Structures are given as C-alpha cells and as structure tokens.
Length: 249
Ligand code: 6PG
Image (tube, rainbow, N blue to C red; front, side):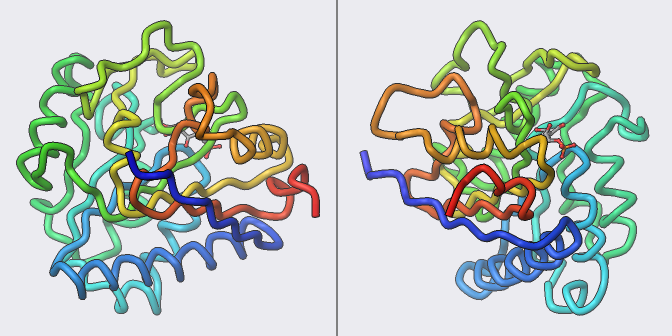
C-alpha cells in the first residue's frame, strides 16, 4: 500500500478570504484536470461552509476560467430529503452555484435524497461506477467539510459498524436531523486525486487539531475525518485563522 500523502495546510484571515483562496485553488485543480484528461470529476461538499466558495466560483473570474462543459459534478453526501428541501445539499449548491453557471443538467449528478436511503445509495454507486469507471472510481477533486464531532461527509463517529470495504456509497444515520443520509465511503474518498477540507470557525479548532494530528500509520481513528487521506493523491486543509487557532506555531 502506498504511504498516504502528507497534508498541505493553508490558513486565511477569515471565512471570506478562505472562500476566495479556495476558489482560486479549486479553479487551478479543475483546469489542470481538464488539461490533463479532458474532464474533471468534481465532488461538492454539503453543510453551510462551502456556500461562499460556490458563490465565488459562480462569479468572475472563476465562472469564465472553468470550462463547465468539461465538468462532471457529484456530491460527497446528501440528506434524505427532497431536492427542493432547504436541508438538501443539492438545493444549496443549486442556489449558490448551479443556477449561475453554464453546466448541462446531464453533468449534474445529485444523490436522490427523495428515495429510500439504501436504494439511493446503490443507485448512486452504480452511477459513479458507470460515469467515472475503474474498480474504484478515481475522483479528481473532493471537497469536504468537518463537523465538530469529527464527522465528514455523512460518516459519523457514532456509526456502529464500519462500512463494507467494497462499498463506495452507503446509507448512514446522523445524530442530528435529517437523520437519514447517503454518503461516499472512505474507500472512494481515499482514492481521489485531491481531497480539500474547507473549515472555518473557532468551534472547529479542537477537532481540526485532533484530526490533522492523527497518525495514519496507527490504528484507524474514531474520528471519520481523520481516516480520510488520499493513498496516492493530495490532501489539502483550507482553514480560516479561527479554525487553525489550536494548531500552534
Ligand atoms: C452535511 C455535510 C457535513 C458538513 C459538516 C460541516 O451534509 O452536513 O456533508 O459533513 O460538511 O457537518 O458542516 P458546516 O459547514 O455547516 O459546519
């Protein structure tokens, strides 16, 4: 097994600067993927943190710098709610990004949160395998958030059973509503070319320190985010100064 890559950490003064810096880096990575392979499989994060980033990507210069006709959009997880529900990760991205960029509907691959969770998970796994291919689909850029409890996507510390090693997409239960979720598994996250965590706020500082400090050479962490480290790729931590405040000099 290849040695997991080291993480690259970039800190910004505040959430607005973080979003601007992340938009620059996302655009750079996406353009490089399109130049190298003619396409880019971009996985959007849920929650509230990425909204500013999506709004920045929907504005100039990034809206024009990215050739949206070459992008395939996916989600790292979804709440099991209708696509127009205010809790839907797809709904947030549609409002902040999709409604403002020239991307074809056929290139937007949302998780069907309106379906029974296990069915939504198996359908999404089939779609991911069909569109990206490979025994384990190699996604170009995966955006992730971080919960104060160390969860990422919808992989929660409370999960009683570790996900089936073979699965790429599973149904999970969140301790917070909406409880039913669908999420990519660590297997496919760790096969990505680049994973970018985007975190802001003082309330995340402690868990950021614990997650980044996790030794991947040891046993898996109880914190799902600590077990995300691309086996043959790049791990980026994009933080504001508040979220980085427990990391020390
Ligand atoms: C979700 C996200 C989840 C999120 C973290 C951080 O569906 O909620 O996938 O993992 O990224 O909970 O959420 P905030 O950005 O709102 O703090």
